[in-house]
Length: 172
Image (cartoon, rainbow, N blue to C red; front, side, top):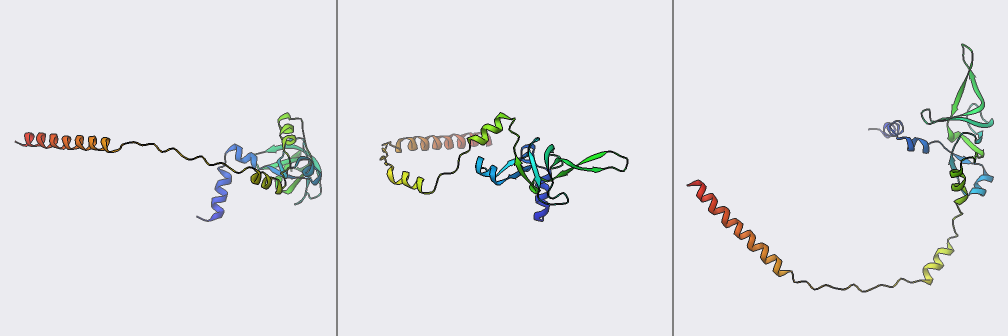
């Protein structure tokens, strides 16, 4: 099978939590520095700027997030129907950058504030040099293995003798 068909099958048969992961978007530079995080899942209420496509440059709040359509609807981006009325246009989150976050969700806020910058590479090297690991010698157990083997062999030999006797009796 072609790799493209496999990739498409993975997209369309994905479970709900994997579909949710696909709705992530990059953060603006100031948010990256503040939260030490490169990307987040887009949520209703986040402010967003479109970077690619027909609506490039438009900024607005996210009104809907659809896992089924794999996109987000933004304020001010609508299309008129022929019969009248407006319809939301869904944009893929990869074409968008998050400019401000909706922090009404306490879980999301705690998660963002809990993330710390990764320590410099020199710090872990110092801890390794300071504390060498002590190796404990393993204790050897002395067990006589000959007795159980002999007992098993005797049992097997007896079983064979019994079977041969029963077979001879049954055939006569």
